[in-house]
Image 1 (cartoon, rainbow, N blue to C red):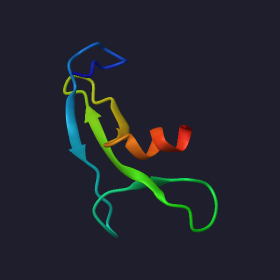
Image 2 (cartoon, rainbow, N blue to C red):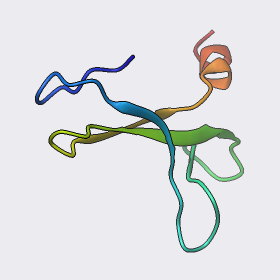
Image 3 (cartoon, rainbow, N blue to C red):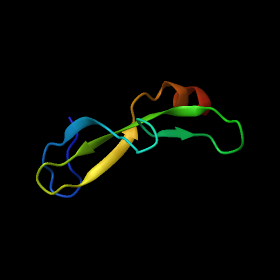
Image 4 (cartoon, one colour):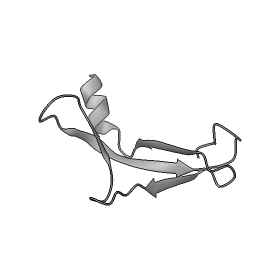
Length: 66
């Protein structure tokens, strides 16, 4: 359960982010031909509308850190 950083209400999680080009936005390493770190999801506060994004799966990020 995520809490809103602005008003401390319970957020709605696992909202899919879409673009006009493709479904989802991914986060990748810097540089040419680097792999994607994964798909971004979002949480939205139903009270104030604050929205935050996060990696749906952090396993690739954990491997990169090690």
